[in-house]
Image (cartoon, rainbow, N blue to C red):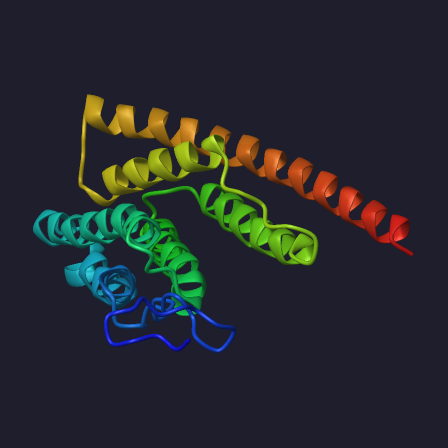
Length: 212
């Protein structure tokens, strides 16, 4: 007996019960915030070096642009996860934007003589090394962000922001101490990522051998 006008329809193999939601497009709020952060990199560099790089007014404006970039970093990933806006573009652009703004700040401050080069080199080598490490184990698993890594990012952002500002007295001492903490967290979280990567790769290779 066929279904009448008022009878419920049945779902067959060619008739899905519900349509899957379309994948998020590139132009969503999370990706827009990431693009804003990328666009702020050259703006921040120009402001940092304006009028010789040591004008207090320009340094304050440079700090404002850096702060905006850091705020977008706090929100874009959270929005992408909560609202289902994760895209391939965001996966690639977000870490690039993070490293671009932080790298620009560190290198700029070292060029201006406000931050020792060894700090900049240590941080940049750590970031590059962890990125390469992630690719090294990506066939087996994704290395999750650790609490130490997140705390490192927060501390590093605040410390670098304080170095952008023309601070003196106890505030200058406070930023130096905070940067020292950021350096320790940079090294410590980096070693933790290396440990995780070695474990993941060892487990992955053992699984491959067991499946042969």
